[in-house]
Image: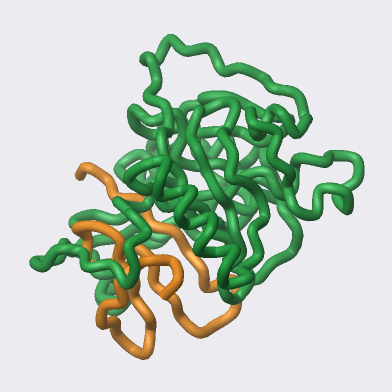
Length: 44
Length: 228
């Protein structure tokens, strides 16, 4: 909460956080570091 | 995305030794996107190339008035910088903006940089996120907010020498590192020649702020805590 992001609903126990117009920007999940990923939006 | 698919199928001249797979319906659902291609950079970081991410019908309502306007960029853990740069520049068309020591600032739009592969100490998180805030005031307000709550500030407030953006970098839960940043410079076009800054503290912060833990780092004092 100290970050200033807004928590929104997520699937399967994940914690989704948003900081702009998108539904979420950061999603926290339980699991090993190998499951981490980052997303890039493509134009097409 | 097309270039990666063609590289996977051997139909292009691009690098071919990067894994990639189409995300299934459940993986797309968890990412709130319509389509995704899951790939890995040279260090094994999982990179999702997504299309049509879900927008919210409601405006962003922050949990505190930090002034966040969006995600500005990320720092990615790199164990093979040369291969990572091949991935980002040859497959995804990123361009090198500047370098500080071995830290490489990569841009994918008009901003000075959005992505920075860098080596940092073993942590649970393989990324560091930078959150854009509205103003320099927001940086300083968060500086005092974080200090009052005894959260670990790792670097700043300061101003990045290469990009000109003001920042404060701090440690969040689960070893995740976050930054608030403001004022990332816009590039002057594709003709920019990347500058090489030396591995010195002033190459990371024009104001001379200290990186926490810099004395433990050894030979490459600014390589491990410089960005994020």
